[in-house]
Length: 363
Image 1 (cartoon, rainbow, N blue to C red):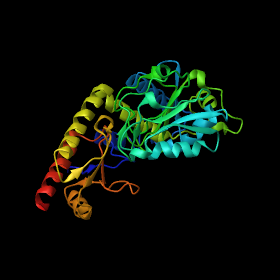
Image 2 (cartoon, one colour):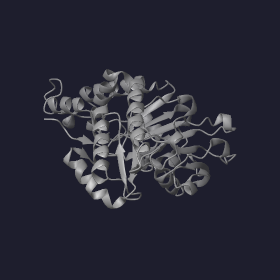
Image 3 (tube, rainbow, N blue to C red):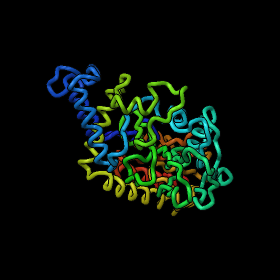
Image 4 (cartoon, one colour):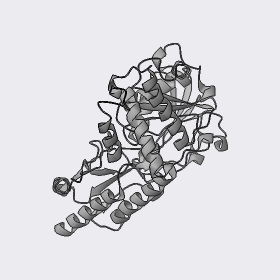
């Protein structure tokens, strides 16, 4: 039986192959007599799972040796506190506000440090990115925070900013929750990147942190030990019991991405899917996307029916066709199609077909 196409923004669809593999190993992982859920996180079986997951992730994202890979808990939302507790030293931090998630990050960081808004697109209603050349950077910023892809607003930095070219020595902190593994990362421009796994990497419960080694050991005295990056790195993400099953599922997802051709192939597919969907929207008078074309997200495509009284009928028709979770975020309304790595081109084509047919019946 064909599965529906799940356009959820997160927790998001996972590759069917990964789910099938995990199902087959649920009761007995590789002859161990245990489910991964039952393993000691310090036992040789789980340590082999963790080590392979990190090695595969390093290969996929081309993570340099002088970066530590941390498997943590708390989601991307908790990192909004954990990052300033580790890096701000209670001083000034620059933020570029480009949508709902970077706004949340800035508000949370105010609990621990002085937040300086270096740039914002609030006046543009989060439909365009502020040009880096116009950012007002602090001379003493401990780091600069961006959200490279705004899941709710559908806006993306297609290229990470080069802070050195802007005259800043501050490390760049990137919330890459909703685009990680969908495109390559230029690590020469990054000090720390973090993201929840539940969009492109696996199930909810796992948080990925990739941090440059020279940024370790700067945590505030009030930082809990379990959230101190230096402590977590020293103990190979085993200071407390990690989210073992989520790490295992992420590891299977990493192997699936490798079998598909790696991150380069994921990017090629994602570009093609986004071009198909945006191309249809732009060619229609019935639907509209309000984000400027040069910064539209490849992962999250918000769109609106010009006559929003027809929203419920559109969603009902989509569900009848097996197109699920297309309703937009409650803060912005409309529709949103999240087309992460696991969403095949066939799913996007099915959505476009529904959009075309619905428009035709409403004419």
